[in-house]
Length: 388
Image (spheres, rainbow, N blue to C red):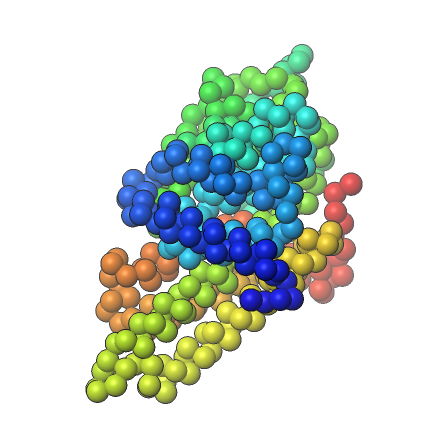
Protein backbone atom coordinates (compact mmCIF):
# COMPACT_ATOMS: atom_id res chain seq x y z
CA UNK A 1 0.00 0.00 0.00
CA UNK A 2 1.31 3.46 -0.91
CA UNK A 3 0.58 5.19 2.40
CA UNK A 4 1.48 8.60 0.96
CA UNK A 5 -1.81 8.61 -0.93
CA UNK A 6 -3.92 5.61 0.06
CA UNK A 7 -5.47 4.86 3.44
CA UNK A 8 -6.71 1.53 4.76
CA UNK A 9 -10.19 2.58 3.67
CA UNK A 10 -8.93 3.14 0.13
CA UNK A 11 -7.34 -0.29 0.03
CA UNK A 12 -10.47 -1.95 1.43
CA UNK A 13 -12.40 -0.30 -1.40
CA UNK A 14 -9.85 -1.59 -3.91
CA UNK A 15 -10.25 -5.16 -2.68
CA UNK A 16 -14.05 -5.01 -2.72
CA UNK A 17 -14.19 -3.38 -6.17
CA UNK A 18 -11.71 -5.89 -7.58
CA UNK A 19 -13.83 -8.75 -6.23
CA UNK A 20 -16.96 -7.16 -7.70
CA UNK A 21 -15.35 -6.89 -11.14
CA UNK A 22 -14.17 -10.49 -11.08
CA UNK A 23 -17.58 -11.76 -10.07
CA UNK A 24 -19.96 -9.50 -11.97
CA UNK A 25 -18.04 -8.21 -14.99
CA UNK A 26 -15.24 -10.54 -16.10
CA UNK A 27 -17.54 -13.48 -16.98
CA UNK A 28 -19.30 -11.25 -19.56
CA UNK A 29 -16.34 -9.37 -21.04
CA UNK A 30 -15.69 -11.61 -24.03
CA UNK A 31 -19.36 -11.48 -25.03
CA UNK A 32 -19.45 -7.69 -24.75
CA UNK A 33 -16.21 -7.38 -26.70
CA UNK A 34 -17.73 -9.44 -29.50
CA UNK A 35 -21.13 -7.73 -29.54
CA UNK A 36 -20.01 -4.17 -28.86
CA UNK A 37 -22.93 -3.88 -26.45
CA UNK A 38 -22.71 -3.81 -22.67
CA UNK A 39 -25.81 -5.29 -21.03
CA UNK A 40 -27.84 -2.80 -19.02
CA UNK A 41 -27.90 -4.91 -15.87
CA UNK A 42 -24.26 -4.11 -15.10
CA UNK A 43 -24.94 -0.37 -15.09
CA UNK A 44 -27.62 -0.96 -12.49
CA UNK A 45 -25.25 -3.05 -10.38
CA UNK A 46 -22.58 -0.36 -10.55
CA UNK A 47 -25.20 2.12 -9.41
CA UNK A 48 -26.41 -0.06 -6.57
CA UNK A 49 -22.85 -0.39 -5.29
CA UNK A 50 -22.32 3.37 -5.42
CA UNK A 51 -19.50 3.17 -7.97
CA UNK A 52 -20.92 5.92 -10.19
CA UNK A 53 -21.27 8.29 -7.26
CA UNK A 54 -17.75 8.20 -5.83
CA UNK A 55 -17.02 11.79 -6.78
CA UNK A 56 -20.60 13.12 -6.82
CA UNK A 57 -22.43 15.33 -4.28
CA UNK A 58 -24.27 13.56 -1.49
CA UNK A 59 -27.48 15.55 -1.93
CA UNK A 60 -28.03 13.83 -5.28
CA UNK A 61 -27.12 10.34 -4.12
CA UNK A 62 -23.34 10.46 -4.44
CA UNK A 63 -20.65 9.69 -1.88
CA UNK A 64 -18.47 12.81 -2.30
CA UNK A 65 -15.26 10.84 -1.70
CA UNK A 66 -11.74 12.04 -2.40
CA UNK A 67 -10.16 11.61 -5.81
CA UNK A 68 -8.10 8.57 -4.84
CA UNK A 69 -11.25 6.44 -4.80
CA UNK A 70 -11.61 7.49 -8.44
CA UNK A 71 -7.96 6.55 -9.08
CA UNK A 72 -8.64 3.07 -7.67
CA UNK A 73 -11.83 2.81 -9.74
CA UNK A 74 -9.86 3.60 -12.90
CA UNK A 75 -6.91 1.35 -12.09
CA UNK A 76 -8.98 -1.72 -11.34
CA UNK A 77 -11.10 -1.24 -14.47
CA UNK A 78 -7.92 -1.39 -16.57
CA UNK A 79 -6.99 -4.77 -15.10
CA UNK A 80 -9.91 -6.78 -16.45
CA UNK A 81 -8.62 -6.45 -20.02
CA UNK A 82 -11.38 -4.49 -21.69
CA UNK A 83 -10.51 -0.90 -22.44
CA UNK A 84 -13.93 -0.52 -24.03
CA UNK A 85 -15.84 -1.55 -20.93
CA UNK A 86 -13.65 0.68 -18.78
CA UNK A 87 -14.18 3.61 -21.16
CA UNK A 88 -17.96 3.21 -21.10
CA UNK A 89 -17.94 3.37 -17.30
CA UNK A 90 -15.58 6.31 -16.83
CA UNK A 91 -16.94 8.31 -19.78
CA UNK A 92 -20.35 8.13 -18.11
CA UNK A 93 -19.12 8.89 -14.58
CA UNK A 94 -16.38 11.43 -15.30
CA UNK A 95 -17.22 13.06 -18.63
CA UNK A 96 -21.01 13.32 -18.86
CA UNK A 97 -21.66 13.41 -15.12
CA UNK A 98 -18.92 15.97 -14.46
CA UNK A 99 -20.75 18.53 -16.58
CA UNK A 100 -24.05 17.69 -14.87
CA UNK A 101 -22.41 18.19 -11.48
CA UNK A 102 -20.54 21.38 -12.29
CA UNK A 103 -22.92 23.20 -14.65
CA UNK A 104 -26.35 21.66 -14.12
CA UNK A 105 -28.96 23.40 -12.00
CA UNK A 106 -31.01 21.60 -9.37
CA UNK A 107 -33.67 20.53 -11.87
CA UNK A 108 -31.08 19.04 -14.21
CA UNK A 109 -29.22 17.32 -11.40
CA UNK A 110 -32.43 15.80 -10.07
CA UNK A 111 -33.56 14.66 -13.53
CA UNK A 112 -30.19 13.42 -14.84
CA UNK A 113 -27.46 13.27 -12.20
CA UNK A 114 -29.33 11.23 -9.60
CA UNK A 115 -30.42 8.50 -12.07
CA UNK A 116 -26.89 8.53 -13.50
CA UNK A 117 -25.48 7.81 -10.05
CA UNK A 118 -28.08 5.07 -9.62
CA UNK A 119 -27.14 3.50 -12.97
CA UNK A 120 -30.65 4.05 -14.34
CA UNK A 121 -29.54 6.54 -16.99
CA UNK A 122 -26.39 6.42 -19.13
CA UNK A 123 -24.77 9.60 -20.38
CA UNK A 124 -22.30 10.60 -23.06
CA UNK A 125 -20.31 13.76 -23.71
CA UNK A 126 -20.53 15.13 -27.25
CA UNK A 127 -17.71 17.52 -28.16
CA UNK A 128 -15.66 16.06 -31.03
CA UNK A 129 -16.96 16.63 -34.57
CA UNK A 130 -15.96 15.24 -37.97
CA UNK A 131 -14.13 18.51 -38.73
CA UNK A 132 -13.26 19.59 -35.17
CA UNK A 133 -11.39 17.18 -32.93
CA UNK A 134 -8.63 18.72 -30.87
CA UNK A 135 -9.70 22.14 -32.19
CA UNK A 136 -12.69 22.36 -29.86
CA UNK A 137 -13.40 26.00 -30.71
CA UNK A 138 -13.72 25.09 -34.38
CA UNK A 139 -16.91 23.08 -33.89
CA UNK A 140 -19.82 23.74 -36.26
CA UNK A 141 -22.82 22.34 -34.38
CA UNK A 142 -25.23 25.19 -33.65
CA UNK A 143 -27.90 25.91 -31.05
CA UNK A 144 -30.26 28.68 -32.16
CA UNK A 145 -32.51 30.27 -29.54
CA UNK A 146 -36.17 30.35 -30.58
CA UNK A 147 -38.50 31.56 -27.85
CA UNK A 148 -38.21 29.20 -24.91
CA UNK A 149 -36.39 26.55 -26.94
CA UNK A 150 -33.09 25.93 -28.69
CA UNK A 151 -32.82 24.24 -32.08
CA UNK A 152 -29.73 22.04 -32.45
CA UNK A 153 -28.17 21.19 -35.82
CA UNK A 154 -24.87 19.48 -36.56
CA UNK A 155 -22.97 16.29 -35.89
CA UNK A 156 -20.58 14.70 -33.39
CA UNK A 157 -18.25 11.75 -33.79
CA UNK A 158 -16.05 9.34 -31.78
CA UNK A 159 -18.53 9.63 -28.89
CA UNK A 160 -18.15 6.96 -26.20
CA UNK A 161 -21.63 5.68 -25.19
CA UNK A 162 -22.81 7.53 -28.28
CA UNK A 163 -25.32 4.89 -29.40
CA UNK A 164 -26.90 3.39 -26.28
CA UNK A 165 -26.84 6.31 -23.84
CA UNK A 166 -30.08 7.80 -22.48
CA UNK A 167 -28.98 11.43 -22.59
CA UNK A 168 -26.31 13.51 -24.27
CA UNK A 169 -24.27 16.41 -22.90
CA UNK A 170 -23.72 18.47 -26.05
CA UNK A 171 -21.48 21.42 -26.84
CA UNK A 172 -22.87 23.72 -29.54
CA UNK A 173 -22.33 27.21 -30.89
CA UNK A 174 -24.92 29.71 -29.67
CA UNK A 175 -22.93 32.50 -31.36
CA UNK A 176 -21.07 31.11 -34.41
CA UNK A 177 -19.30 34.45 -34.88
CA UNK A 178 -17.45 34.21 -31.56
CA UNK A 179 -14.94 31.36 -31.61
CA UNK A 180 -14.33 31.10 -27.87
CA UNK A 181 -17.26 32.83 -26.16
CA UNK A 182 -19.99 31.62 -28.48
CA UNK A 183 -20.20 28.02 -27.26
CA UNK A 184 -22.70 26.59 -24.77
CA UNK A 185 -23.43 23.25 -23.09
CA UNK A 186 -26.80 21.46 -23.16
CA UNK A 187 -28.28 18.24 -21.86
CA UNK A 188 -30.53 16.45 -24.35
CA UNK A 189 -32.75 13.37 -23.99
CA UNK A 190 -31.87 10.60 -26.42
CA UNK A 191 -35.53 10.20 -27.40
CA UNK A 192 -35.80 13.80 -28.64
CA UNK A 193 -36.89 13.80 -32.32
CA UNK A 194 -34.16 14.53 -34.83
CA UNK A 195 -31.32 12.62 -33.13
CA UNK A 196 -29.78 9.71 -35.02
CA UNK A 197 -26.62 7.71 -34.40
CA UNK A 198 -24.51 4.99 -35.96
CA UNK A 199 -21.97 2.72 -34.28
CA UNK A 200 -18.37 3.06 -35.48
CA UNK A 201 -16.16 0.03 -36.12
CA UNK A 202 -12.93 0.44 -34.14
CA UNK A 203 -9.50 -1.16 -33.85
CA UNK A 204 -9.88 -1.48 -30.07
CA UNK A 205 -12.26 -0.59 -27.25
CA UNK A 206 -14.57 -3.11 -28.89
CA UNK A 207 -16.98 -3.43 -25.96
CA UNK A 208 -17.90 0.26 -25.96
CA UNK A 209 -20.42 1.80 -28.34
CA UNK A 210 -18.51 4.60 -30.01
CA UNK A 211 -20.93 6.54 -32.17
CA UNK A 212 -21.37 9.25 -34.73
CA UNK A 213 -24.41 11.37 -33.89
CA UNK A 214 -26.46 13.69 -36.11
CA UNK A 215 -28.76 16.49 -34.89
CA UNK A 216 -31.39 17.50 -37.43
CA UNK A 217 -33.51 20.40 -36.14
CA UNK A 218 -33.53 18.98 -32.62
CA UNK A 219 -35.78 21.16 -30.47
CA UNK A 220 -35.01 21.22 -26.74
CA UNK A 221 -36.30 23.34 -23.85
CA UNK A 222 -34.22 26.44 -23.14
CA UNK A 223 -33.94 25.23 -19.53
CA UNK A 224 -31.70 22.39 -20.80
CA UNK A 225 -28.90 24.93 -21.16
CA UNK A 226 -26.28 24.16 -18.52
CA UNK A 227 -24.49 27.07 -16.90
CA UNK A 228 -24.25 30.39 -18.71
CA UNK A 229 -24.82 30.79 -22.42
CA UNK A 230 -21.50 31.38 -24.14
CA UNK A 231 -19.41 29.87 -21.34
CA UNK A 232 -19.19 26.37 -22.81
CA UNK A 233 -15.60 26.61 -24.01
CA UNK A 234 -14.32 27.60 -20.57
CA UNK A 235 -16.32 24.77 -18.97
CA UNK A 236 -14.78 22.24 -21.35
CA UNK A 237 -11.27 23.54 -20.77
CA UNK A 238 -11.84 23.48 -17.01
CA UNK A 239 -12.65 19.77 -17.06
CA UNK A 240 -9.88 18.75 -19.45
CA UNK A 241 -7.43 18.47 -16.55
CA UNK A 242 -9.50 15.68 -14.99
CA UNK A 243 -10.01 13.94 -18.34
CA UNK A 244 -6.31 14.01 -19.15
CA UNK A 245 -5.38 12.73 -15.71
CA UNK A 246 -7.92 9.93 -16.13
CA UNK A 247 -6.22 8.94 -19.39
CA UNK A 248 -2.83 9.05 -17.66
CA UNK A 249 -4.01 6.85 -14.78
CA UNK A 250 -5.62 4.43 -17.23
CA UNK A 251 -2.31 4.20 -19.07
CA UNK A 252 -0.11 3.43 -16.09
CA UNK A 253 -2.66 0.89 -14.81
CA UNK A 254 -2.92 -1.10 -18.04
CA UNK A 255 0.88 -1.02 -18.45
CA UNK A 256 1.26 -2.33 -14.91
CA UNK A 257 -1.22 -5.11 -15.68
CA UNK A 258 0.77 -6.03 -18.81
CA UNK A 259 4.08 -6.13 -16.91
CA UNK A 260 2.62 -8.27 -14.12
CA UNK A 261 1.19 -10.71 -16.65
CA UNK A 262 4.48 -10.89 -18.57
CA UNK A 263 6.44 -11.53 -15.35
CA UNK A 264 4.16 -14.43 -14.46
CA UNK A 265 4.44 -15.81 -17.98
CA UNK A 266 8.25 -15.72 -18.21
CA UNK A 267 8.43 -17.23 -14.73
CA UNK A 268 6.60 -20.33 -15.99
CA UNK A 269 7.73 -20.61 -19.62
CA UNK A 270 10.90 -22.65 -20.17
CA UNK A 271 13.52 -22.57 -22.91
CA UNK A 272 16.90 -24.24 -23.06
CA UNK A 273 16.36 -25.89 -19.70
CA UNK A 274 15.45 -22.82 -17.63
CA UNK A 275 12.58 -20.38 -17.21
CA UNK A 276 12.62 -17.25 -19.32
CA UNK A 277 12.98 -15.01 -16.28
CA UNK A 278 16.54 -16.30 -15.86
CA UNK A 279 17.71 -14.80 -19.16
CA UNK A 280 19.48 -11.50 -18.57
CA UNK A 281 18.15 -9.75 -21.68
CA UNK A 282 14.57 -10.41 -20.61
CA UNK A 283 15.23 -9.59 -16.95
CA UNK A 284 16.68 -6.22 -17.89
CA UNK A 285 13.78 -5.46 -20.22
CA UNK A 286 11.34 -6.15 -17.38
CA UNK A 287 13.39 -3.96 -15.02
CA UNK A 288 13.25 -1.11 -17.52
CA UNK A 289 9.50 -1.45 -18.08
CA UNK A 290 8.70 -1.70 -14.38
CA UNK A 291 10.71 1.46 -13.76
CA UNK A 292 8.85 3.37 -16.46
CA UNK A 293 5.49 2.28 -15.06
CA UNK A 294 6.47 3.25 -11.53
CA UNK A 295 7.71 6.69 -12.60
CA UNK A 296 4.44 7.50 -14.38
CA UNK A 297 2.33 6.07 -11.56
CA UNK A 298 4.03 8.14 -8.89
CA UNK A 299 3.74 11.30 -10.98
CA UNK A 300 0.06 10.63 -11.65
CA UNK A 301 -0.62 10.12 -7.95
CA UNK A 302 1.01 13.44 -7.16
CA UNK A 303 -1.11 15.20 -9.80
CA UNK A 304 -4.24 13.52 -8.41
CA UNK A 305 -3.32 14.80 -4.95
CA UNK A 306 -2.96 18.36 -6.22
CA UNK A 307 -6.21 18.17 -8.16
CA UNK A 308 -7.98 16.76 -5.11
CA UNK A 309 -6.63 19.71 -3.09
CA UNK A 310 -8.22 22.14 -5.54
CA UNK A 311 -5.16 23.15 -7.53
CA UNK A 312 -5.40 23.91 -11.26
CA UNK A 313 -3.19 21.23 -12.80
CA UNK A 314 -3.76 21.62 -16.53
CA UNK A 315 -0.01 21.54 -17.26
CA UNK A 316 0.71 18.51 -15.09
CA UNK A 317 -2.38 16.63 -16.30
CA UNK A 318 -1.37 17.27 -19.90
CA UNK A 319 2.10 15.93 -19.14
CA UNK A 320 0.54 12.92 -17.43
CA UNK A 321 -1.49 11.98 -20.48
CA UNK A 322 1.33 12.69 -22.94
CA UNK A 323 3.97 10.58 -21.24
CA UNK A 324 1.84 7.88 -19.62
CA UNK A 325 0.02 6.93 -22.81
CA UNK A 326 3.31 6.85 -24.75
CA UNK A 327 4.83 4.69 -22.04
CA UNK A 328 1.87 2.29 -22.02
CA UNK A 329 2.02 1.73 -25.75
CA UNK A 330 5.75 0.97 -25.57
CA UNK A 331 5.52 -1.26 -22.50
CA UNK A 332 2.57 -3.29 -23.79
CA UNK A 333 4.30 -3.74 -27.15
CA UNK A 334 7.37 -5.14 -25.38
CA UNK A 335 5.27 -7.31 -23.06
CA UNK A 336 3.58 -8.85 -26.08
CA UNK A 337 7.07 -9.63 -27.44
CA UNK A 338 7.96 -11.42 -24.21
CA UNK A 339 5.09 -13.83 -24.82
CA UNK A 340 6.40 -14.69 -28.28
CA UNK A 341 3.79 -16.27 -30.53
CA UNK A 342 1.31 -16.48 -27.66
CA UNK A 343 1.34 -12.70 -27.38
CA UNK A 344 -0.20 -12.59 -30.86
CA UNK A 345 -3.02 -14.97 -29.92
CA UNK A 346 -6.44 -13.69 -28.88
CA UNK A 347 -6.56 -16.31 -26.11
CA UNK A 348 -3.94 -14.25 -24.28
CA UNK A 349 -4.53 -10.67 -23.09
CA UNK A 350 -1.75 -8.83 -24.90
CA UNK A 351 -3.34 -8.56 -28.34
CA UNK A 352 -6.44 -6.83 -26.98
CA UNK A 353 -4.33 -4.74 -24.60
CA UNK A 354 -2.20 -3.53 -27.50
CA UNK A 355 -5.25 -2.52 -29.56
CA UNK A 356 -7.01 -0.87 -26.65
CA UNK A 357 -3.92 1.03 -25.55
CA UNK A 358 -3.38 2.63 -28.95
CA UNK A 359 -6.25 5.06 -28.37
CA UNK A 360 -4.39 6.59 -25.43
CA UNK A 361 -2.27 9.04 -27.46
CA UNK A 362 -5.30 9.95 -29.61
CA UNK A 363 -8.43 10.34 -27.48
CA UNK A 364 -8.99 13.27 -25.14
CA UNK A 365 -6.48 15.44 -27.00
CA UNK A 366 -3.80 14.00 -29.29
CA UNK A 367 -0.21 13.86 -28.18
CA UNK A 368 0.66 16.40 -30.86
CA UNK A 369 -1.84 18.91 -29.46
CA UNK A 370 -0.70 18.25 -25.88
CA UNK A 371 2.91 18.94 -26.84
CA UNK A 372 1.90 22.33 -28.21
CA UNK A 373 -0.18 23.13 -25.11
CA UNK A 374 2.73 22.19 -22.85
CA UNK A 375 5.15 24.15 -25.04
CA UNK A 376 3.00 27.26 -24.67
CA UNK A 377 3.21 26.92 -20.90
CA UNK A 378 6.90 26.11 -20.53
CA UNK A 379 8.33 28.15 -23.43
CA UNK A 380 5.86 30.99 -23.99
CA UNK A 381 4.98 31.18 -20.27
CA UNK A 382 1.26 31.12 -21.08
CA UNK A 383 -0.72 31.00 -17.85
CA UNK A 384 -3.98 29.10 -18.30
CA UNK A 385 -6.57 30.13 -15.74
CA UNK A 386 -9.47 28.14 -14.33
CA UNK A 387 -12.96 29.09 -15.46
CA UNK A 388 -14.65 31.70 -13.27
